[in-house]
Image (cartoon, rainbow, N blue to C red; front, side, top):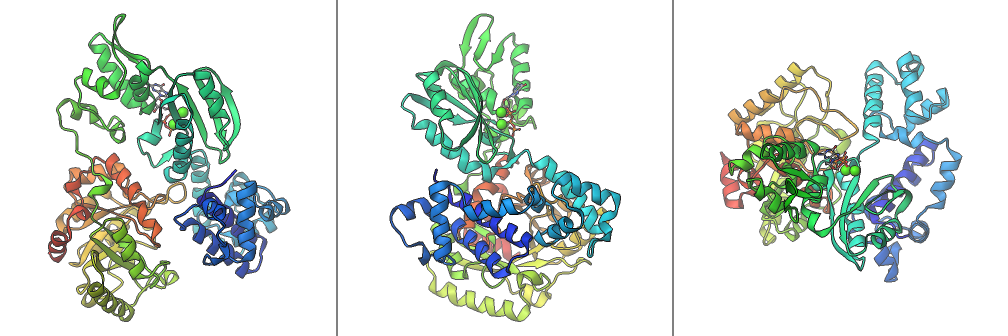
Length: 572
Ligand code: DGT
Ligand code: CA
Ligand code: CA
């Protein structure tokens, strides 16, 4: 029943939320949050550490109680204290936590005054206006809450890619470990690397269909078996993720993989093309009348259709079939093309690692450079840097670069774009940095015209180089602010500003569609992790996924340049 580190971290975070809703001691709350972070960023599985007999209290933020808690969770899959707390508090309160603008304290207020425990009850009180009787609930907050309820209801049924990933990979390994399994692949939106997946679609080729089905439903993380048949079974995992398993014959593997990878629109397009030739394509193979033409592999399928091989990330019926016909498909960027990370944070503001630790972690990932881009002082919640502290940091980085080998730290800032479009720090200091990122962190609610004008004014600052997380959306949580994106593209091109593909799995901002559009408008892009700790540098993979979905090639990106070339570009 062993849980992964992120599942354990989840349990601790939920515990902290519930304690906060209950109004418990803030120190206790913080202890759980710190423990969650330690667990999340461990880099080694807790299960292995416990098995090897390690004393967990040696880990930062883990005392005797938490060490015991971890042992209990690993053994039973549950945390009795959280279970007890859940019994004590009304059900459903924790769901409200996903609403932007609602923290534990406000949820407590809503519960005390109206007994609200669900999204529907919350929407009702907000719509009736009763909610305004509560202290601190003004029209802006209420509007935000209502928007949040709509988003939460929609998002509740989909899983973020990074959350589905450990489940998908572990289940794939588990199926591969089955004796008679010949091939196993996770298809569907997961294989297309969409930012969220509705469910997992797994294909297997096995010697014995019945035995592999039995093996599948016996998987330890299965909560419920919805259906079980000879070629198709469906289960629900304990995190409520649905998995469809399909057994296919070896000779149909390619057609089945193509069919179940989708997207549906891409499939329909390909099938129509086949029909025009008098052929038929389905999940079993490609046929001309009764005659079988193929179906063993996807490569063969595309080649029979006279198409270049189309990578799964492109299969969204956005012109990929036409491009494949004309041998015009992009050569998609790969993780190993990335030479460095240009948006990261350190302990100087709201990060959790020192600059040196971040640099070493970047080096360990094979990078040539990393830019430290802490927040500017307007962002007080993140202890943003004023000019004086920024200059201190710059000096430290200069000294660090003399000592470090094999990695260069670039001096940067994630500078707030103020409401009027000016930058939060004066040009006199911006000009001494290697790299200036601009970002919107407040006043999300300006009109489209005002917001666009604000950002473009900032872009015209001669030191502004990268527009960070350009649309501000948080998947399933916060919508993008209003922005005239084509105006932004135009300005970015004119001013030589690069748009970021922020690789945080809940941001992925700009998204695939905008990335493709930006490329068409000849706007430069870069993929950054916005890491606040060393482990998060690995988010790069999610950014690369999104870029690939946006048809992005190595040459479209700033941070695929080697250091010497990058420096020249940054000096311009
Ligand atoms: P999801 O799960 O909502 O994130 O998206 P998908 O793309 O994984 O969709 P899903 O799980 O409903 O089905 C998996 C694949 O099966 C889908 O990408 C294409 C194929 N498929 C499903 N239904 C149809 C259909 O009615 N026609 C065709 N041509 N393909 C279908
Ligand atoms: Ca699916
Ligand atoms: Ca499915």
